[in-house]
Length: 279
Length: 262
Image 1 (tube, helix red, strand yellow):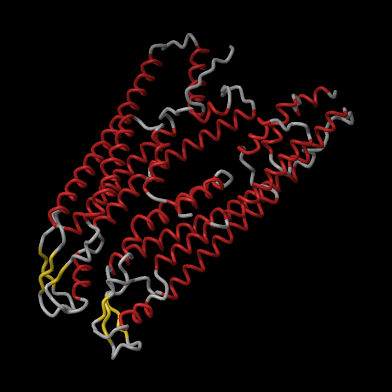
Image 2 (cartoon, rainbow over the protein chains, first blue to last red):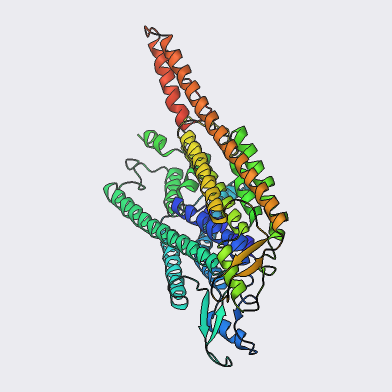
């Protein structure tokens, strides 16, 4: 399991995300994970071996390195990226659960042929109902993790700039010794780069949150102004098969609109046509 | 997530590029990314370990290395390649958006877009027209800007593209001016010149592609203007109307023109 494995897992979630969510995922994978793997890891590769202190005292080098770098930037970023990308798995799990429900419904309504089953797997879920809450929670958790790690970073390495020289007097160093860090400028450049991309991801997450909330409110407003949608409008004339279809449609509305379309197309009943046929 | 994954992502964009765009992508992956991975990374692999200064003063080597190489060539090229290849994702996103719209129309049973099934929508290649033309042109423009910016940054940081054998350093804590020796300077110079040359070829390809797109755009426009002049009396008003409707449809539904019954 490596970054490529994570990419495979999260690519599936991509399909059920909003447009902003997809942009966020691209930024994460291309500008953070990829830069981490192809560039940053080699910059920090010799961080301990090239950390030199002006002393011959055995152990002083190790102790000073440990004092100034309790956790390496690379490991902190790797943890941050893993924790930030995993809330998307909540959405993946919920989608899998909904697909399972849809398949069960298809079996109940007698549409359990392989073609319909495939379509259930392939079609995109609308972010509505309980899936909306799961999605919003995942975005909130992402934001939380990003903010927490930015704060931890600031606490551990205040100022974000990597110094060339650090002065160390931890035991067993005999007195205050000068210790020199390897590639400080390059490290500062990459630290600033990763911070900027992290901020961009935070902004994208906030934008996505706002977008989801606004869309939900707009949908609610639309729903209030059209209260009769979804209920039978056959002028009191209920054919038994059409009534059954209507009930199934109502159940399906909570699942996904496209599945409803698929079944409607295949059962040959069109809602608009039905209204006319009931006259 | 590595260069292979980037290749997978960008391979999809290739289908909707012009011929020059496809050549550019090939040059990028074979002559730049592949050379970086299989050759250049090994040349720069021991850049700090074998950077030797004529002093025993602890820390002097570190400081001098940092002074002369604020950011390594390899990292700069890696960043350049990432930035230069990502504008193509704008095109990929636009194409995905168009496909999504077509799928929606197909699902609604809209007669304007006739496709046999979803597979055809998925496999369809979009022509670079309308709003997609603007997205594509913007992506080329951004590529050019990023290439130019990184070439300038390179030249600014390393003052010409040659790697000297010897550098004189007197940053603290070096006790005085010390001689520092760079590892494999000639090999590094060769690869630097190679990468700069390929970068220039990529810039030329991008400029050529931009010119090609602009020329095609203006030719198409003048053809349209010529066609409309040929019917000055508007005798066939319905055909003109049909033409206009066709143009509107072609913006949303590429490659498909269906005549409406008069």
